[in-house]
Image (tube, rainbow, N blue to C red; front, side):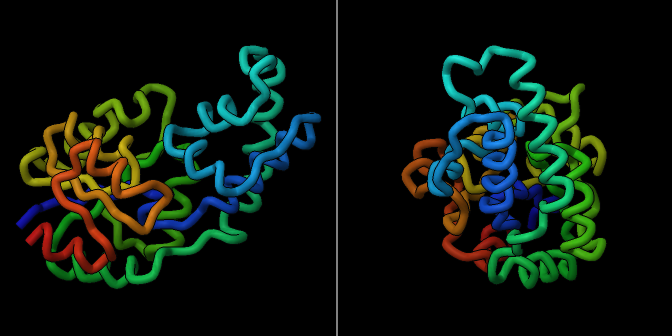
Length: 216
């Protein structure tokens, strides 16, 4: 059995797409730019807030630092107050996390969401079940660079072969593989089965309870 399970957050543990979209659209509209439909955010998110803002800005202003910083600041201000308005845990996730905890498995989160938001959400939603949560910080490259996953392994003193990385995008699968871990792609998130398979996921979980059998 694996000793450690590292979860992605958005699209894996937490349905947060609407709150992320609302915060980004608020910031775009406030600065005079067009907003985007919810469905497009499935592919805007996943690589951190910096790329989220870049992907949603009009092409002609993407490289304008003043514009970028203004939109980013407005996003952060709005999201800090509304990150839980519409977000919710996926059905079955809390039960699966509880079972893993009862089995003695270490639990961690590695997310490209800013660290301050990641830690608050994990703590509030999971009542201390997670042993560690790592979000995006300036001195650690975002996923799919393996640095964040390797930092979690080091923090919890677990070898890569004793851990599994779980996520809903090719970013997550590539992260886990690059760090030397087995990977589980989950189908209830923002992306597709094809994407997860093409990224080389070792297992595909159709529902959260499938995770238990894959790590046992």
